[in-house]
Image (cartoon, rainbow, N blue to C red; front, side):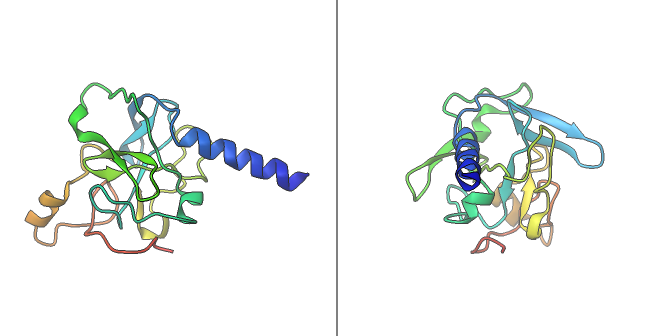
Length: 161
C-alpha cells in the first residue's frame, strides 16, 4: 500500500509539472542572481547536453528532470515573448523552450525558490534570462563558455549521470 501511495504521488507530481503552469516569472536569490520560475515559483532548469529544439534527457532522466510545458504561457514584463517557444519531443510530448533550449523542473525541488538541482552533475543549471546565451552567440566567443550562471556549453550526448 505504501508503494502505491508513493507511486501515485510521483505520478501526480509529474502530471502537474508537465503542463499546468500557465505563467512565468523572473525571481532573484542572493548569491545566485535572477532565474526563471513557473507561476508557482518553482525553478526552471536547462540541460547543457541539449541543443536547440532537441532534448537529450529521455527515459529515466525524465524521472529526475520532468519537462516544463505550458500552452498559454504568460511571459513577465522585461522578457521577450519571442524567446519562448514549444517543441515536440521525440516521445511526442510538448516542451516549452527558452531561446530554443528545453526547460525542465527538478524532482528534488519541493518548495518555491528551491534550487536543489542547480549545478547537478555539472550539467543542470537554472536559467538566468539575462545571461543565457544562444548557440550562435556562444560560437562567437573564443573560450567564453562556462558552466552555470545561465551560460551554455557546447551540447554533448548523455544525461550527465
